[in-house]
Image (cartoon, rainbow, N blue to C red; front, side, top):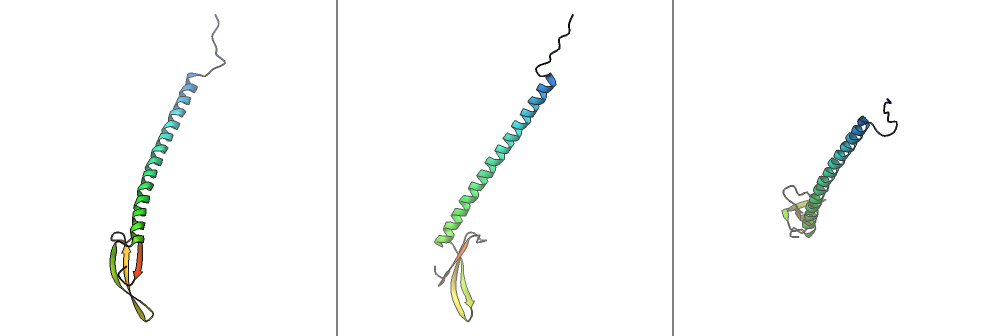
Amino acid sequence: MRKLRGTSGETLVETLVAILIVTLSSLLFLQMTMASVKISGDAKEMDTEYQTALSAAEEQKTALSTGTITVGEREYAVTYYGTGETGALASYSAGGDG
């Protein structure tokens, strides 16, 4: 009786290793896709906040304070416009009333 020896094809170990590699690659790809979706959403939200703040600063709608500044020997009335308490985006207008 002859022994069957397969000289072509894959062994069970090779097949299991290939399945493991494909599974790990798929998981890494899925994780990478989920991270990129989260980053994209965060960027979209920050962009919306930035555009809203920029629009408010450009239209000078939210006056945070008024006062005077001294340049040389002259004093000028100014109004400070910004967004929120921190005034992340800001602009100034001379005259104190926009």
